[in-house]
Each structure stands twice: as C-alpha cells, then as structure tokens.
Image 1: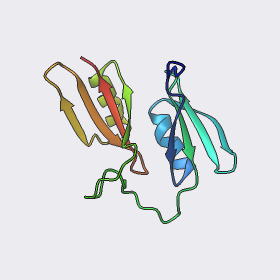
Image 2: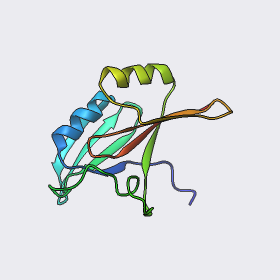
Image 3: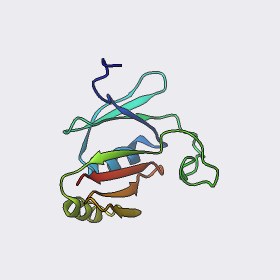
Image 4: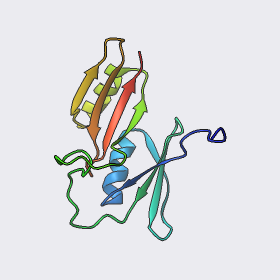
Length: 131
C-alpha cells in the first residue's frame, strides 16, 4: 500500500510501568501519558519520533525470558526493535554509564555495526549504525 508513510509506534507488553519508564528514560524517551484505555497503555516518545506504547497487562508471574528469543522452539512474531544511531562508541558509552549490558555486537564487512540490549522485561533492542 502506497498510503503507508511509516511506523507509528511499537507496542511492548511490560510488567511494571515504573521500571519500564525508568529504563526507557535512560535511552532518551520522554513519558507522554498513561495508563489510559481498557488494556491499559502508557506512551513514551523519543525526540527522533520513535513512539513506544507499553501494554500494561503482563501477568504478574510472567518470566523475564523472551518467548520469541530465549526458548529452543522458534515462535513467529516480532523479535526486536532496531533503533538507528549515528555514533556507535558514544551510544555504547552511554549504555555503560547507565549500567545497561550489551548482549551481542555484530560488524558486517560493509561497515554496518549493530548491537543488542535487553529491557527489564527481556524485550530486545538493537542499536543499528548503517555503513
């Protein structure tokens, strides 16, 4: 469809809004509103225009493991969000300053670099620097 102009938001199911909010604020996201609606949902947005909706109905006993990434059986579904960056070393430094561990780094022959972190609920975030 030619009418699609971009991604409006990403929805992430989380256990605790306060914990999720604190983590994503360290990544530069601002809290907009929430909880609102029947699910309920809270919204954060980055100055770059990336919008995240936190779905606040995770089971209280839910595991921190990620069903799509951490089990041998490979289920269908969205596995991660990729945030494009301009400076690999600066982002790595900021993550380290905030105590956020990088789980894997990949460098492609063309110069593309990407690396991954996990949020407190086990959701995977990729930081992607194109060649």
